[in-house]
Each structure stands twice: as C-alpha cells, then as structure tokens.
Length: 425
Image (cartoon, rainbow, N blue to C red; front, side):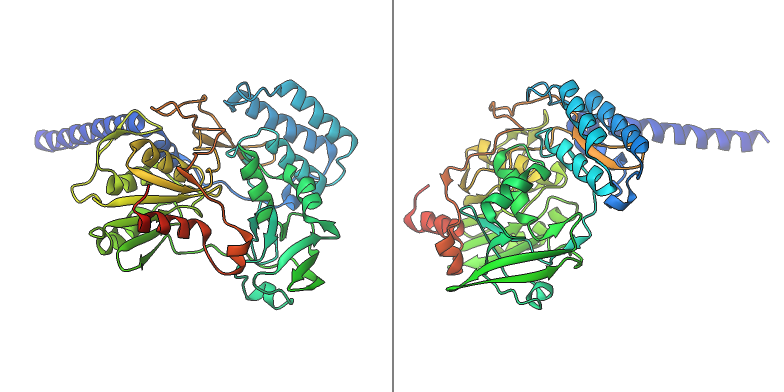
C-alpha cells in the first residue's frame, strides 16, 4: 500500500510541476505577446444575419442598451477620438424609438453605431448573405470589375467594366450614402471597404448596376445570392526579370509562416526581393513577427510589444521592397511598421489602413450578437508612430491608375521594379 501511495504521490507532484511550468510559460508568453494569448483562449465569433436579431421594440432596446454598456466599459479609444458616449447613446436610442421598425432597420442602425466609433476594429459580426460574386476595385474614385468570377459574368458583366451607378445613383452619391455603414480608423479605409462591398447587401436581393463598357452604357440586373469564397492561397511566389524575387503574403492567419518558409529558399539568394502585402487584411501579429525574422538584418524592438525581433541565421541579405496600400490592415500593418522602422526596407504604394488592432476583444450582446472593440489604450511604436488612426506612409507614395489598370499594368509593382532597375531607393 505504501508503494502505491508513493507512486501516486510522485505522479501528483509531477503533474503539479508540469502545471507550474505551463502557467509560467503562459505568463512569459503573455508578457511577450498578449494578443497571442488572447487569441488562444478567445472563441471564434459567431456570425448572424439580420433575421436573427430581436424582432420587437423592447427586445431591441434591451439589446442595444447592453451593447452600449459593454462598449462604454471596454472601448479604449473613444476619449482620444473625442466621442461622447452619452451623446452617441442619445442619438441612437432616439433613432431606435422613432424610426427603427424592423430587424433590417435595427441591423443597419447597429452597423452605423459601430461606424461612429471610428475604429477599424470596432464592428458587429453580421453575415452578409446577399452577394453579387465580385469585389470591385476602387481606383481614382471610380469602381471597376477586376477579373470577375463565373457567377457575375453569367448576368452579362465583363472584366474591366466600370460601375457608374447602382440602383440609379451615380457612384459619388452612392458612396456618400453608404460609407456610414462601414467601419474604419481612417477615411481612406472606410471608403475602400464601402467600394469593395458595392455588390453586396444585408437587405437587398437585387441590384441594378449601370456599367460603362467602351463607348456604351448599359444597366444590368444583378441578383444577390452568390456565396463568397475565401482564397485558400496564403502566399504566392514569382521570379521577375530573372533576379527579382516576389512573394505576395495574403494573410497573417495561422499557416502563413509555413507557407512563406516553403517559398523562401527559391528567393533567398536573389539580390532583390519584393514582399507584397497589399491584399493582406491581417490575422495574428505573432505570424508577422516570425516573418520579420526572415527580412531583418539587425535586431529591433517590436512595434507592439516590449520584445526584440532578431534576424534568422539565414535571413535575407539582399534589398527588400515592401508593397503596401489601404487594404494592408491589422497584423499586416504592424508587420509593415516593423519593417518600416527597421530602416532596412523600402516601402512603395499607398498609406496602410491605419489600425494595428489595439487588442480587439469580442463580446456578445444580450441577444447573442458578437461584436468587437479595441480595448488597449492608445499607443505609439518605439519610434513614436501612432498604432491607430494613421496609415503607415510609404517612402514612395504611388497609387494604381485607371490608365494602367485598363492596360493590365500594376502601377505600384512597376514603380518598385523601376527603382530596382535604376538602383534607387
């Protein structure tokens, strides 16, 4: 019996030691990367449709009151942005009382409530079921179809069609009416998100789209019931002009480091490398940290956390150019800041979306609607750059032009290639 007791005691002691080590490791990791810890324990939000919102006025009021209380207690940026939470509540509670009559009305009200928080990481998780099968490109204040899929083509739409009106409203008017439905920390990001969602709707099932094609203008009905699909590719690689590596990083979600690592050997010995994060909407900043290790030549302090980023033993030794634009957001933006502040990488393109995250947390309303807000106080990077509210400025600000788009030319990529050819920075 004593022998059994000793064995059990040893097992318990061993388990206790393992538990202490695990807790200690989590503590160290939490200090180094609190966002990673948050994401490890945070459940994925459930997306709902407007049809799942409360349907009667009293339930809507209770739901909105609960949302506003949670936002007021947890949203960390409203003081910096000069937002009066009491005034905001009064405006929306009056609207709820006077003009909200249906679930659709309530859903649109909530979209605009979160937009008025003026933060790219303040949003409600609604599932948009009404989708036209394409996300238009927004270039020089104009909307174009860019390699649209099979669904929208069968309704008569062509690649490079310019969308000049939606439901009879010209694009400037339509944009002004709809930008209030899309959150963002900068006006540029809100405009981009509005334009990208031009062929989707939370409420409509049919849009009448007027397009300009060559010298003709025609209006085509577009039913909205296609299912949007995610691009499964995380990284794409090319060799340009025999000596220039190119890797497009499309996400900072899990799996991106392994995907990058599989492509890296084919470019690491080339004299020039272009990293493209223009379509990267973020993910986990830890993945961005690991990617930085491939591209840095010297140690630097991480822009979000008090930790040191160190180059890998086989880190890239040639010249790195980073392509950015307004779509570069969240964890992709902190990745851009780290490379920008290293002084070793040349940034080309347009300013980023203007929000690295400020530790967004997900909450639930009384009715079960998931939503998120930033919870970390306003911060600056080690070099004094604001981590929310301002896009990262490229060394060479270059925007896609309509002329080049119609000719199939990537204006920003071509500019980076010209810098390499000229030997300029």
